[in-house]
Image 1 (cartoon, helix red, strand yellow):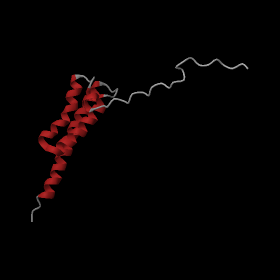
Image 2 (image 1 turned 90 degrees about the vertical axis):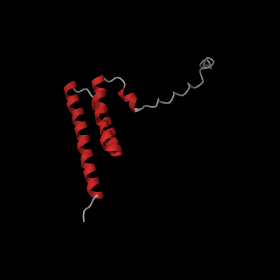
Image 3 (image 1 turned 45 degrees about the horizontal axis):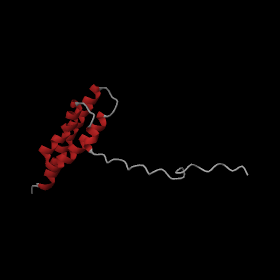
Image 4 (image 1 turned 135 degrees about the vertical axis):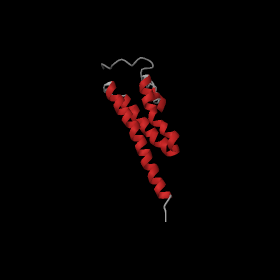
Length: 109
């Protein structure tokens, strides 16, 4: 006969579902970086002007890598060296891919 008291009105209702997570884009990852980090993130994208579509794809992958490097807790000097290295590697890969494509399409008899 000792029953607990009834819950207060509205207590039995379920809380509303949480809102869906906001969509994130590339520019959301760049927000909050220092100006020099943004500049170094964009360096691999300059391969687009030399290599067209192929350079753009390689440069975009390099830029994404640089964003990841910029977000790490490495010292600033290490970040600069690594990010410049990513830019250099992007250009080396671009010239290798371009050379392979040239050889494949310009076979001499």
